[in-house]
Length: 283
Length: 244
Image (cartoon, rainbow over all chains, first blue to last red; front, side, top):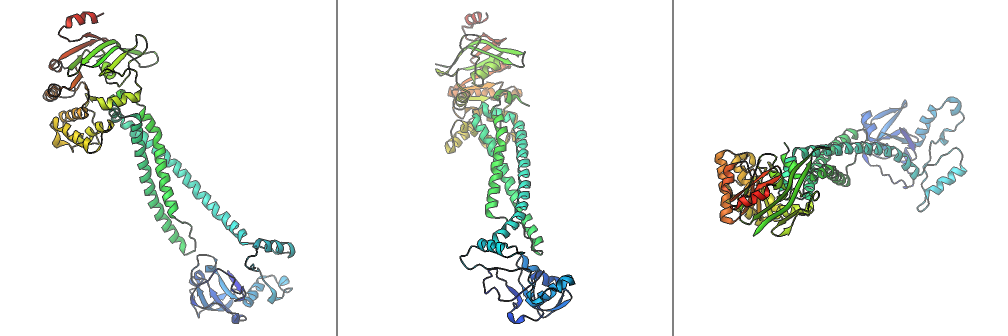
């Protein structure tokens, strides 16, 4: 993406700071010349560094700066002076339209910086009302757009997670039920020599809670590895999708443990209701 | 002093909707403290059922006859809830089974400690008592072994140690020598007699083995869900009354 702007026109209001790996930023003196600052991904793509010449839309530009990776839009941008961008842009329009326009007055967008303390939504509403053919987007609107995309991703991940938990929980119930069945005699002995029903239940629930805990820790470990690998694989295209926070780690292990304990409850209940005499004789 | 006495003890088991078994048809029994009593009888005579009721594993049936009575050291235990019966079993009774019935994943010491734990005794006191019990059965040096590493005779001795560790008022043993060869049986029997003679431990055994019966103070004989012979020296009187 080629972006053109007059350097310094924001009067310092832009809060997204760009860092330069090599070279320099565009200056107002660059207006009129064909120079470019490349984002990190583009620079890599063109295999260009400061001083090289790159061709953008059949026009030659001299690279004067390369940005540090930002993991977002600028990595794929080529920043040129406003006039150069206008020239490139008009070439993309059909001749009939282009002939009617004044090159130096073309803009595809305007960035409006509200004065400190002014509500951006108010400005957006005024623009909407008074300037035809222009759609303002506030930061909030942008969040919503991006948010829609990420919340879809989140929903899918949560859905997959819930299904996994359900399967895992049923798995624990099954395992514990089998474990109880195999230890019917043992349970009979314990009851006969004086273990209370509650005691038997407690033993089994604790066991299944530990199964949940160990499973949760193993899952967390695996998940952490996958998160790391996934992020590393996506880093080059600025797609860092996964974030493993301490909160996620702790709550997922806690959840697995609780799920294990809960799943063990039904087999535990059944075990505690066994008649000791019958259980003792079980083969 | 009578340590355990029961009256009007009945038990019917329901095997299916139409199939019931009247295992115990009305039994009266009395065991004195310090006695070693054998209960003998053919299969189906109800001796195991009687043992289960005396051991509070099952409650006697309250219906189809006069109210059952069961007293341990004078206290009524006939109408206790399952939880209460469990507590009494844990603290005041010891059990030995035919199949040894040790927990296979625990060591000998841990198996004995189970009984202490269920009786609410923990920590160093429990450990000391458990080691002492194992010592009394001659297995103190095998305390760390699992049942799979012990012979049948040794496993049964661990079970006896487990039954003894809480110094229960009564030990109930269901065919304790049933799965042992004659040498091991003699060992186990000697051990039980030793506890009975030296420590005054009350022991009630169910057995098929007449040698075991002969080693006891008296033999109660059962048939068809009733006691036919109380085994007292003045047995003849009781026997005629029992055979109704």
